[in-house]
Amino acid sequence: MTSPNSSVRPRLVVSPIWLVLVGILSVQFGAGVAKSLFDEISPTMIVWLRLVTSAVILSLLARPALRGRSRDDWLVVLGFGLSLGVMNWAIYQAFARIPLGIAVTIEFVGPLTLAVLGSRRARDLVWVGLAAAGVLLLGFERTDLSVAGVAFAVVAGAAWASYILLSAQTGRRWPGFDGLTLASIVATLMLTPFALHAGSSALGDPRILLLGAAVGLLSSVIPYTCELVALRSLRPAVFGVLMSLEPAAAALAGLLVLHELLTPLQLVAMACVVVASIGATRSGSTIAEPVPD
Picture 1 (cartoon, rainbow, N blue to C red):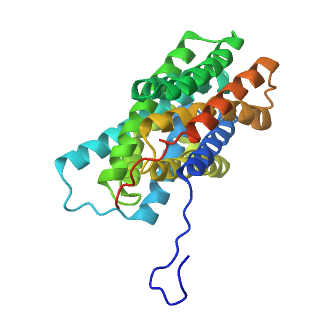
Picture 2 (cartoon, rainbow, N blue to C red):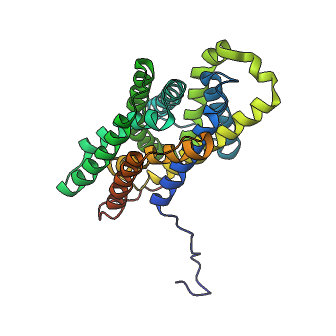
C-alpha cells in the first residue's frame, strides 16, 4: 500500500499465467472461426488476412523505433517473423486436412519437446509426462488423419518451438510491442505472394475481409500480445508446459464453433493436460527474473 502523498502510483499487475490462458482461448476460437471459412476462402488467404490485421493494428499502436538497432536485434526479429509466418501457414494447412483438435495436438509436439529439454527438476518432468499422456490420448483417439495434414502439423510444431524461444529474445531486445509489430510485418510480407496466388478475388468481398480481420484479432493480436508480455517473466520451458492446454482449448472451440462433439476419451485427455498445467503454474520456479523494459 502507498500513502496518499506518495509519489509512487500503484500499478495493476496481471499474472503472466493469466495472460497465457487468455491467449490460448483467443487463438483457438479464432482458429475455429477461420476453419468455418475454408469453403469460401483458401487457408493461405485467411492466414494472410489474419497477419495483415495484426501488422496494421500493432503498427498503429506501437509505432516501433527503428534507429539505433544492432545487427543481432534485426536478426532476432527477422527469425521471429519467419517462425510466426511458417507456424500460422502450416497449422492452417493442417486444419484444412485433419480435425482441429488433432492438428493442435500434433502441433504441440514442438513446445512439449522444448519443455522436456528445458526441465531441470524431476517434478517438472512429472507435469510434462502427464501433459504428454493427454496429448497421446487426443492424438490417437481418432483415425481420420491424412499424411499431408500430419506433416503440416509437425512443421507448425517445430515453428511453434522456435516462436517460443525467439519471442522471449525479441521481448528482451525490443521494448513494448516493437518486436512483435516488426515480426508481424515480416510474416505478412513472406506470405503475400502465396496469398495473392491462392485467391486474390476474395479481397473484393467485404464480408470475407471483416471475418478475416476478426480472425486476425482473435488469433494474432490478442494471443501474441499476451504471450510476448508473459514471456518477459516466464521461463520458456514453463511456458511450453502451460501451452499443453492448447489441445483442450482447440477441442472446446471445435465443439462451440464447429459443433464437433467430444468423446469420453477426449475429456480424459483434456483432464490430463489441465492437471499438468495447474501443476506447472503452482511450481515455485514458474516466475523468472523480470526483464527491465
